Image (cartoon, rainbow, N blue to C red):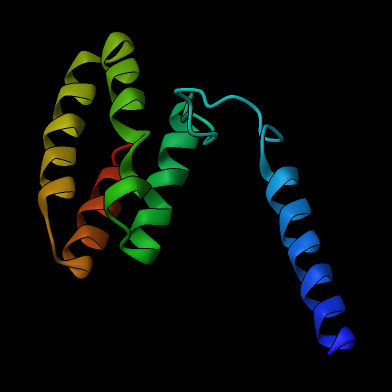
Length: 109
């Protein structure tokens, strides 16, 4: 009986230590989710080619609108066209269609 009691005490102690170690060890949360923004046309094209390859949607598209708005400042016509294409891209539930739209967008850069 002493052996079982000893194991329980050890397990309880280990659990308590792990719980305490988890408190306050993480840096404070920030608005930035840690993903690198897409800053240049070449980075934007690379990101679109990744979508064209894998067909990702949702959060894999997060940084693209900011880059397109930046592009719009230097090339309004291209930026506006690509923003329209992006709206199609982000609303398309079909992975194969996302691949095609992303490829078309990348080809415009």
